[in-house]
Figure 1 (spheres, one colour):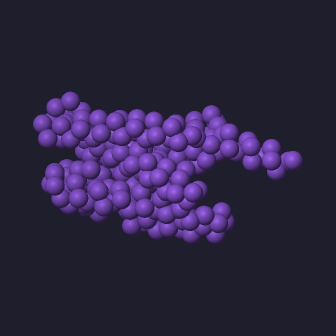
Figure 2 (figure 1 turned 45 degrees about the vertical axis):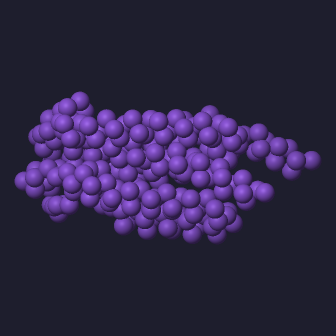
Length: 230
């Protein structure tokens, strides 16, 4: 009887396919919109792009050794290679503890897709970073749009939050998920801007791409989960 009650509660708290699909659609629309606005701003230096240089100048003006050390630590932790290693460890632990395969695969797959997508778009847009005189060493000289660090962190937080909330959801979990995503984005985006490695449009584009990948991941999860269930 107790087991039936627990299972019933878990089923009721899980997102329906319809709800998940609607959330995916909203994420795709919002993500595409944010990316397009960022891209236009980057190309034409208008709209959000008009803030690129003023924000960089403000960051440079307000640098100090203590903040610099913190920003360097944040950006180093979010290095795509380091972050993939962290996600891989989480993947292994998840499989071992929860005895699951699909959700850990979805998590690491979405992060990998984010890294690949970032690399492809960089090679297409070939947008230059701020000059090295405005950077804090070590310098980064590859293309800037979008921010690889930001897209991986945002994608990881979004997809991980979805996997947790969609299976056993309540209002508190959803609010905590949203707060963590916002804080994570602000921290990594600020570190990239502060250190002089990126423009504002680079990090906002990464946010948009993260939402797009989340939307796509939700649809993939719906299809695969239904197949596994059947």
